[in-house]
Structures are given as C-alpha cells and as structure tokens.
Image (cartoon, rainbow, N blue to C red; front, side, top):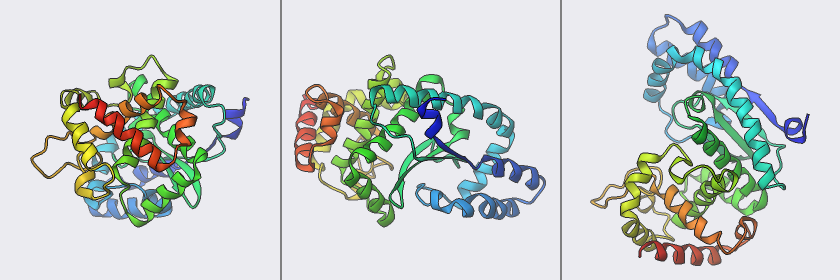
Length: 296
C-alpha cells in the first residue's frame, strides 16, 4: 500500500442510507420524510449543516427520485472510490506537499452537492455525494474531485483561508466577490494543471454554462470589477449561487469559469504555491488587472 492509500480516512454513511430504503418501503410520504431526517440528516447534521438549500420539499423529491436508482448507486460506488484513489495520487504528483490525513465522508447528496471541501471545527473535511458522482462521465468526475482536493490543499497551505471559510459558513456571511473568484477560480485552474488534457469546458460538468458565458465575457468582467470588493448577496448573485434579480445578463455560476480564466492568467507569471502566498490586497489588485484584460 502506498502513502495515499494508507492515510485516506474514508467514512462511509451509505449503508444507513441503503437500510433506510429497505425499511421505508410502503411508508406514507410524510413518514418517509420523518424517518429520513431522523436516520440520515440528524446523525450527520455536523456535515449537512454546511450544505446550502436543504428543505423538506427537496428531501421529499429526492427520496422519490432516488429510490429507483439505489441499486445503481451501490454498484457504482466502488468504481468511484477507485477513481478517487487514482485522482488523489495524480494530484499529489503535482502538489507533493498535499496531506491526505483528513476525513472523507460518503453521504447522500440530496441533489445538492457532488463534492464539498469544508472546514469544520478547525479541520478540513471532504464530503462526497456518491449518488451524484456516479452519474458523471470520466473527465467531469476527475474535475469535480480534483477541484475539491485543491480546496483542501488551499486550506492546508493558508490556514487564514480555512479560518475565514469556517467563519463565513458559521455566520452565513457570503465572502466578497474577489475571494470567491479567487478560491473557486484557482481550484478550477488546478484541474487543468493536474489534467492538461481536459478542455476548459469539461473541467466541471459545465459546458452549457461556458458556452453561455464566453460571448458575454467583456461585459461580465466589467461588472465583476465594479463589485469586486462587495459581499452583498445581490452583487454576488449571478456570479455564484443564485440568479441575479435584475435586467443584467449574468449566467448563474459564471464566476467559476471567469475565476478559472483569471487564475490561469495569474499563473503565467507565478507558481500556484507562490500565488497562494499573496496577501489579500496584492490578490485583489492582480484579479482586477486580469478582469481588465478580459474586458478587451
């Protein structure tokens, strides 16, 4: 066994998930909901508390939609885990200082995440939604997992980023736009560093978003520069998380792609590890300069 296999701490919560469906067959919808929350959500509330968008209606829809796929999920789980091990080893070839002694939790995704690197109680923890990951083709699977591994690496390299992310989750305060562009952009750029054969529109499962964003890049970059330091939800919306409620044509989530382009531009003159050591003001200035280039 190599060092990666020896240090990975994979905690599998999916057996309880499978047993729920065995026991819940034929139960009324509302009783299924109560049982699911009692057996799946509440014992893992430490992890689900960081997942945005959980609701009773969403859980009801998830239970109904996922039940026919239970067999497929568990037959595909081992394949995903094997690919995950290979991806971790490939990642360490590019980032040899990456530590693999953190917890990895396999959880039902509730259709809300595929992978999430989150800081909880001063620890970086990786959540994997196996039911979402098994649906991905090979390149987006590599992309999602590498993206989240890089977030974990970012936390390891810059403890202040981990502390800030944990504070933001605890207070429900959205980080400023520049910070989101940077953290999500550099994680997306890292996918292409580890897997240069992956085209930019296959880094994540986002080809329609990239195709929609490209012709709007000059205007989107200009808008991002105006609100770069803002942490107001109405300014972040559109670029990340939620649709923008205005007449501005901002494809929801385009900040991931724009951030990747920005990170790629910054990486032309610096190594990734050097970029991670830049202070906030230096980063904001570099991001603004890169966005200015994208407006042309």
